[in-house]
Amino acid sequence: MIRPDNLEIYESLDLKLGIKSSLPEVKSTIALLILLWESNDRPDMLKYSEQQNKSIVIPAQLKSNLINFIYENVSDFKIIDDKFEYLINSNKLYTSQMESLIVAFELIWRLGKFSFVDKAKPSSAERTGLNRYPKEIYFSSNLDLIHSVISNNFDEFIKVLIDWLGYSATFEQNYETTLLIALQVFTEGSIYKLNDNGKSIIFNQNSIYNKLLDGNEKIDINGDSESKGPLRVLKSALNEKMNPYLEYNSGAVSVNPELKDRFVTYQKRVETFLKLSTTDFTDLREFLIGNKCQNGTILEKTERLSGGENILLYGVPGSGKSYTIEQEYCNDESKIERIVFHPDYMNTDFIGQILPTIKEDKTITYEFTPGPFTRIVEKSYKNPSDMFYLIIEEINRGNAPAIFGDVFQLLDRNKSGESSYSIKNHNVAEIVYGDPEHTVSIPSNLSILATMNTADQNVFTLDTAFQRRWVMRLIKNDVSKAEHAKVEILDTGVTWEIFNNTINDFILANNASTMSSEDKRLGAYFITRDILESKDESKFAEKVIKYLWDDAFKFARNKLFEPSYRSLEKVIDDFADFSGFERFNIFTSEVKEQLRNKVNINQINLTDSDSEEKSEE
Image (cartoon, rainbow, N blue to C red; front, side, top):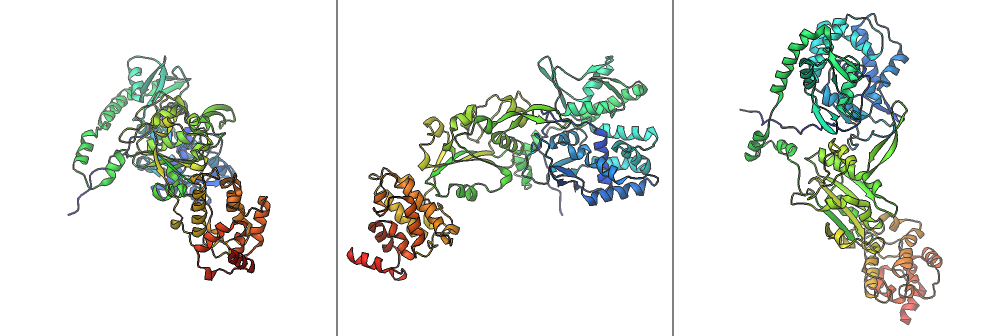
């Protein structure tokens, strides 16, 4: 006999009490969402938009479905195609930023969950500028309740929705009131926040109802500072008279006198609903964990992953540090923020900064734009069942301590991988936690991976205090593991592995006299197969030979290069103009002999000059 699995305990919703998202024209947005659902056979998910330049628009098929649906249910209605398409594409469902839609439809009306079609984009991707990206909706069962309400008199309710959408339609008022009451019920579990003389008040609509029934004529929901998140959307909804029991004017809420008697009993039902909606899963979660239930998704969704580390991968240039990250840690770009430090990179680039923003009404405001550190902390905090990675390439090519700033303190981690300490940063806290007063720390499911070329360690030195907060991992320069190790260099008969090992051995043997060091060795991935096999002979020379001339043997070129050479230009020209093993005539006899000893001489076509040179030696 098959029995059900243990119930699934979902992640807590981020209430987004501190973000500045708003949603004017709430009625028209809800109307379009319901109409899209009804006109597409009431699906569980709908990709409702496609890209058009910097905007998103309704796909042609969905537009056709919507028009046919309206004609089927409202026979006397006439659609002007251009006007209709304009109304749809200018609807807030298409023009508002993602976070506004999340607040309205996930946190207040709970009609659906929104997602970018490109899952790699964070919910804050549209926060600045006017770019909009294709989205999809995962509808909730609240739409089924709406359908049950409107199906009693479908054509009349569709007229209400069309009117909300912006087309003038004639309908009886009681149908609109019925629909508004149904929608209002969905909002009663929503949470809001306002500022009262420096203190935060967290409340729901029942908090307003109780105050009104205590005899207060009007309730102020403006607070002492700018409204944010759900409260901004609630004020838009009240301004559009979407709560039939209330009246609203400039932040003041009062009871609708026409429904006062019904309001009293409605408030009691809301009170009962809220009592029935409160569920504490603490004991149940402990039971599931204790019994090691087979439905592993429960633990994955309720328990934050641990094990986050700060790992610094170091080695010679081209040794495969970035390749190691991709192969051994993560290659899923949706879970990665990748940056490169450089001398001009600053703390504001890393954390975020306040920048001018063009709002939808064309006004300019100044808002905090999160940097890569803030974005990846937000992702990891809100997705506890996944491991995320901040990848910093070339960490020592920028002033790392200055770039990290006070975030430096967060690099100390406890056994789970979470920061041992926390810091105050109102801007970051508002993005990550929705509360500017929340302290900021690195979650245990976020690892920071950095790469450092040891040959560049004198660019910006990493002091001991900084380095001790990292797990240091040397990436060995093992050319034999490179996929192009056995590829020959042009027509020379010498493989990249032989050349790499020969030159690196020579660097180590001569590092004292050349003022060089092991850090100047050629990395296994210093070049690619394409360069080795390129018909343009100068590519190898300009990549490898130039490095050896300008860097590795800069102070003792005659140790590696034939002493008659006085310029890099001549070295590159001769390497490109010669053929076969003769290309290596740019090197000293000692170097050429070492190369010969590591290859099968029978496979090398020695020129006459090479043969003579060998006999002389």
